[in-house]
View 1 (cartoon, each protein chain N blue to C red):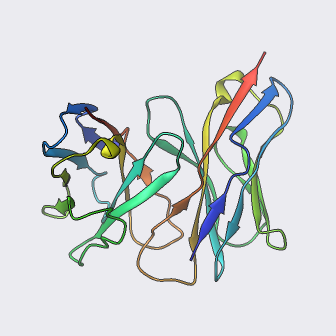
View 2 (cartoon, each protein chain N blue to C red):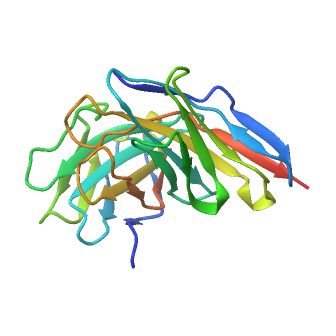
Length: 115
Length: 116
C-alpha cells in the first residue's frame, strides 16, 4: 500500500518568506508526527497529532512554526518569516495509534533551504 | 526525560564481517526501543523494536539487536555485513512510564560504511 507522502520534496525560499510543507499519512493511521533533521543532528520532534485531540506542540522551536491537520488526514506545517537556521529536512511520520509500542512510518521528507 | 546516545558517528566494516552499531539510552520507566535506517535522500525505515520479552530482537534485512537492561544498551548487530547495508542508522527510545502519545527521542545517528 501507499506510504507516507510529502510535498514538495525540495523547497528553496528567501529569508523572510513563509513556506508550507504538506504531509499525507498512511490511510487509517490516526497519529501524525513532524520532525526536523538538521545537518549533523538527530531528529528533533516538532509536533504530534492524534485524532481529534489537541496536538502536542511541545517541540515547536518558535511561534513562527505552526501545523494543522485537516479532517484527521493531511497535515500542513507552516513556517512564517523563514530564517536561515530553519534550513533542514522536515520529516513526517504516521502510526496506527499512540501506544509507545507502535512503530512510526516516515515519509521521504522535504528539504528546505532558506537563502 | 528520555535520551539516547549513539557514541560513534561512523562505523566502518568489511563486507562479510559482523557489524555492531552502539546505542545507549536513559529513561525513567521501562524503555521502548527502536532502530531505524535512512538511505540517502529517503525517509527513515523501521528495522526492529524491543518492547518486552526476549532480549534478542530480530528485524528486517538480517539485523538484530540485543537489549541489555543493566548496561542500558540496545546495540544493533548483523552477523555478516553487506555493502548495501551502508546507510545512516538511528536508535530511538520512548519512556514507557510517560503518557502523551508515541513521541520518540532519537540519537544523532551512526553512518555505517561497508567496504569490499
